[in-house]
Length: 101
Image (cartoon, rainbow, N blue to C red; front, side):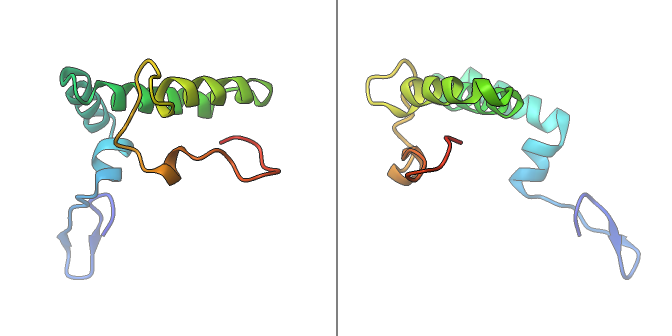
């Protein structure tokens, strides 16, 4: 079941996935963001999430600059809010010939 939709026998099944609870549900998203912001060791993760959402809303001509700013701030050792917990694959630039994320 997804999003608490009843299936089959008429009982309600809850979707307990992170995506549903902390990304798709406005109150869950707000509470999780506040949790990240309230913990110094997780604040950079919350800021990265906010910047990635802002990036998704950028006009196409603004994306290259926004991607470069995100990489230098969060993905580069010594960056203002370096997210050392990210894997090397997560912080790798786009493959040759592709636009940045």
